[in-house]
Length: 378
Image (tube, rainbow, N blue to C red; front, side, top):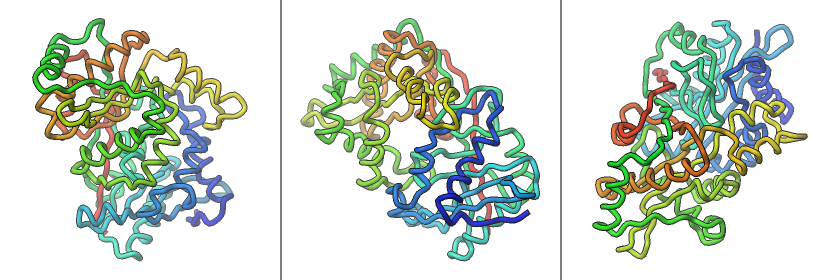
């Protein structure tokens, strides 16, 4: 077995392709978009490289790839948290402990050479990338937005020694109710009357041409700033996110809350998408051509999925106690009912974020997945 650095465009294509080959027969895995993976990993396409550096490694055995891993240093995050951390991500491997150990060792060596004293992962370049290794929920279908992996992955980490739990995320599956829970609707009404907060449905023109897309991510920077490992998104990165993802959203599935006492300043948002899991499984290795694009458009525009993915929800801290969260859920649930969604899948949330997790107590919900970030001293 040999560990080789990714140096060429062909190497990078091999790096991306390995995961598709490893999971091609798994019924629960959802392929990631190929062009999204390429755009994220290329230095010349991902604005995160303003603040990051990275190295990619492939494990070769008997003439074929048997594993991959990325080593990432986010300088802005390290400065924010006063750490010297090298992240590992894009960590996939066959069920062979020699392979997984060798890949982890490659990241350790790469990080030490750059003065890092701790390794953490799986993590990406930014908080908008996938984080955590699946440790519970292997028998439920994955999503485009969160890691899915075989059950032997965490077993390998635990056998290596030196790793310990750093942070857990949980994913909740929420049954869409026939009526908005009474307490949610009552708080929403009281909030509007007492504090003059209002739901504002964005138009696509506002989102793309009037700067509201940037405003959403300005709020994300403010509301997520104290969360685990978070680093502020730059204007360039925000523009990329709006252009690549948000601009194709169904505007009825985006909800914002504005403060009528403060020139209708945006104080909260909820961004949701119809589940693309079934559509992505019909693509060829996550590629949109020749027919993959049709399945995605079918899911986004005609809502043939019975599940909606709740991607990002954020409310400024000073507005949480005023009921802005209830206004967002009141707005979104009514739209889910109109579209006929049966389930809402909440994306990974920190298990210690009790404020966010408490929102689900008013719904028929359950935790269906758990993901873990590990850390190790170097």
